[in-house]
Amino acid sequence: MFKRIAQTAGFTGLLAALLLTLLQSFWVAPLILQAETYEKAPAAQAHEHEHAGAMAGHVHDQQAWEPEDGWQRVLSTTGGNLVVAVGFALMLAALYTLRTPRTVREGALWGLAGLAVFVLAPTLGLPPELPGTAAADLTQRQIWWVGTAASTAAGLALIVFAHNWLLKVLGVAILVVPHLVGAPQPEVHASLAPEALQAQFKIASLLTNAVFWVAMGLISAWLFRRSEASSAHSGLNHAV
Image (cartoon, rainbow, N blue to C red; front, top):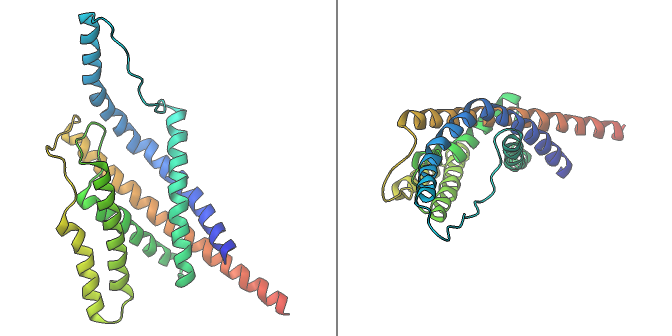
């Protein structure tokens, strides 16, 4: 069983991560690079003013390392996507041991559930942000994000699998609670990037994540069912 989970998660995570990186490279990354030009412009202007004033004892602050445009950025993105994808795939494979998908298409439903839990619900309060966008305290945002994802997962589980209608109603209530509390917001909403660019980024992020999750559901269900059938066939041969 553990071997089946590991194999399913490993191959699913690899394929889904490569697909996500490809989509991000052609659609999401160019928008981020464009937004970074707006973010870096004020810093460049301030740097020029400092040099023009010939301030004595001026010292350059060491900036945190970040991957350069090109292969470094793509490699860094691929590594991050791989870690995240394998983690999510492990979660799906573990759930399949409790409720094996009857068809490969059922894996798409599991993928859509993952999309709802980890993308759609948190995005309602904390939409994707381009560089240069004002944001609330990071710790507070992380706490709200984790709480929202957990509430959404629990709520959906009750709505779909519970037989008692009271439990289904409870599931709906659990879904709503994080949004009634509200996500932490910055004191002033501001962004250096134009609104049109922000809108494009939100759409690109949502659609790429949707493709990622549906693909991961389909791939993981196919691999898990294939592995299960192989194990069953091997067991019959040993019995004979």
